[in-house]
Length: 177
Image (cartoon, rainbow, N blue to C red; front, side, top):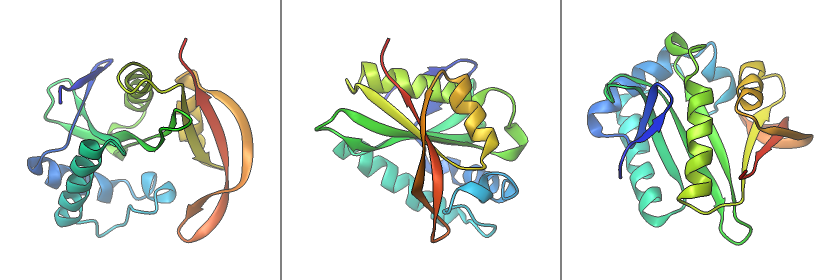
């Protein structure tokens, strides 16, 4: 698969050599990403990253998800991840998610990633709707959805499970122009 340009960033599938940077990025980001992503924990390992990469490859192969690493334009410096998942072929929509390691936040990577992934969903995958679902209280991610041009549709009660607890979440949508 060819990398996707995302503004001054690049989205590409993960490779095994990315595992150390991925694990380090998760561990450094517990005060931000760790609050909102149940999979993120302070002891995240390279082995867990490799397992995630395998899942990403298998899901891309069967069309059930399209997950990417977010890199600087060099394609080597990993700063996070983003993807399209929970694809609903019958109704033509999916979920869009993203995370950026703490040391690279507030540099436009998440907004650029959301825009590039939405374009991929509409162009390559021929979907008609992309949803961004953000836990209530996650102000940085809410700002990303808004800056990416997503429309806020509602605050859905008990929409997400976060650390084995149901939480309310904002539902945003993007549709093709």
